[in-house]
Image (cartoon, rainbow, N blue to C red; front, side, top):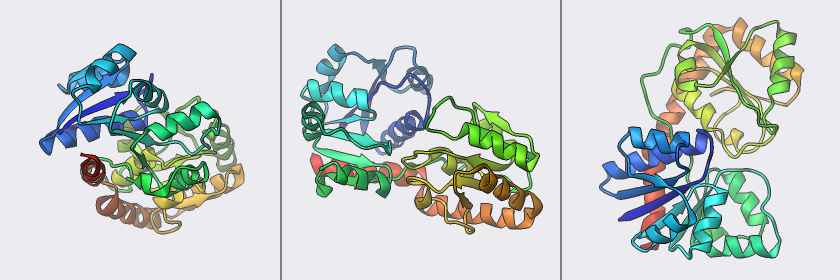
Length: 298
């Protein structure tokens, strides 16, 4: 099978890491992949570094490449638009975000064009159904993360949280909570590096499709505190694989202190979380679920 992947992202965020893991897994499964991404974007450069077939994204390159593709997979909203305009097909579209879909005529035409959708959580799927997309056209395939050897829950001493300027994330709340709890934070731009020194991972957000950064922390054996929002409750079971909190400084601060004051219990949460990732959220599970969608269309 020849799969054309499209991603128009400027940054290297959770969705872009999923594209890389998917392409590598599909390659290992004997499938042929081409990626069209923004020239010199982090995804484009990383794909080239991993010797994947990555080419500059443009409307012309989409038109040229769709002709020989068995499946076209658009991984973000802009590439969805390009694929729809290029009459790509069969077209699979990943939906990662939790905000509602527009209901205007152009939006309806764009969303009618896809043969199938992959939602990263049941929360996202429900949002799509509310917008009028038929349930049979949507399959939930959770994000997957590598299962590297997990660290000890006591292996780090830092409280790590993502560094982001996204207004939908809760950076201000995390700052306020840290002041209340009288702790210092590491605002990470490289989670794969910084989770190795983490005693806990704090992920506060106002809107979330799933939370692949949380999955990375769980896979690394790091106790997690996350907002009780969006698709996050589908991966974090409160007081079993992590802590879910309301988006208030007081609730976040209390959760930080609970984990800090009881490292043995924090370690138990982390071990349970690692097992859950192994069972349900591995990169292998994500690749298998996506490939199954492709095969229904070819």
